[in-house]
Length: 164
Image (cartoon, rainbow, N blue to C red; front, side, top):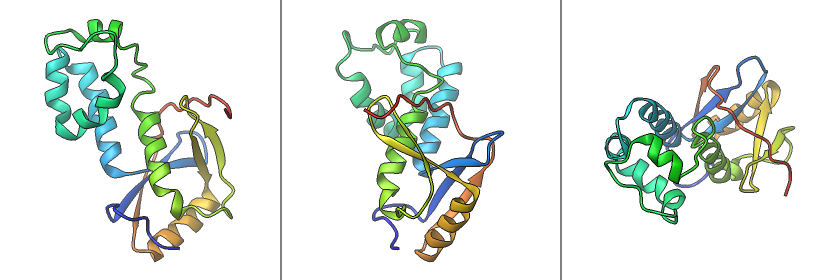
């Protein structure tokens, strides 16, 4: 197995609280999702949130907000933003970040692993890995030059929309 190209040397494994399974996520996407959710709860308006999430977060959000019925203005309260962009902040951006991480890491996940697959709202698969597969994957990933950092109780709400 070879390490996927253009990834940092560390990937995260988010253990689902109360279950013996979890998902992989890239650190920069985990950082963005954590920051976005925290700032959504604490920012006074859209401009403050956009400043807090920084350039990476702003670039990440662009595809999700560029075709809204009206542009989001810096002065809009987050309640007003939610009226325009009906985002489920309990799920967004976690699902998208797990989905993107899985897509970018997929070359490292060989078919021999017994993952439970769910389907995101956009019709993309995401795999939950059990303990045995996590340990086997860690061995393979570490052997390919990556470090896996586990985070317990860290899996966000991921809804299975069913296979398209």
